[in-house]
Amino acid sequence: MILVLVPQVTNRLTYIFDFYFKEIFKTDYDFTTDAEKFQSFSEAKFSYGFKQVNDELYLEADPLLFETTVSIRQISIGLYKEIKTIFSVKNGALPFDPFAAGFYMMTRYEEYLPHKKDRHNRYKPESSIAISGGFLEKPIVNFWALLIKEIINNKYPQSINYSGTYTFQPTLDIDNAYAYKYKGF
Image 1 (cartoon, rainbow, N blue to C red):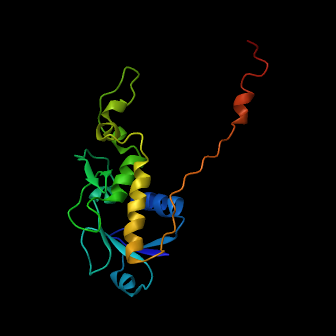
Image 2 (cartoon, rainbow, N blue to C red):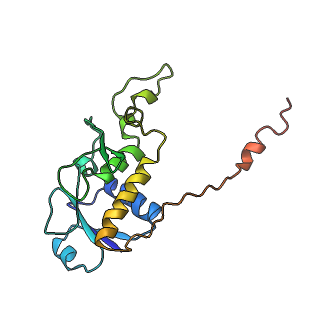
């Protein structure tokens, strides 16, 4: 289990941590806002917030996951280890916030902001940060997951055993096969 010290627990925070740790890494984690509990914890841990407490593994947070409104953000694209990044930060183990970035991409946050619409009143894909950043067809959130795994495992070896292998399992939606039954040509 990995313990994460945070300033407060929010729905946004829980959503993206569940995705990274439960869905991708298949690893248990827990949040704490108690610095003493965090300091006494002897297993893998890191702090995620706006300031480092001691000399622990620290990932600086962008305020996005601690907000409750949708607001316009100036997003700049960076590069770290040949991987495109968004939500740059100044301190911490990574030069960007992979949790805020992951949340932004997974929830399609930018589609909730004011934007130009196409003739069918839909979000124009050309407006997407993924297109302007050149990573539309790349599993960017999974790349960020590998960076999270790397920094945690550097400090706490074998804490995350995620291999990053891809499997494809085709399925058949059987009710579609019957959608045309008795309809004729």
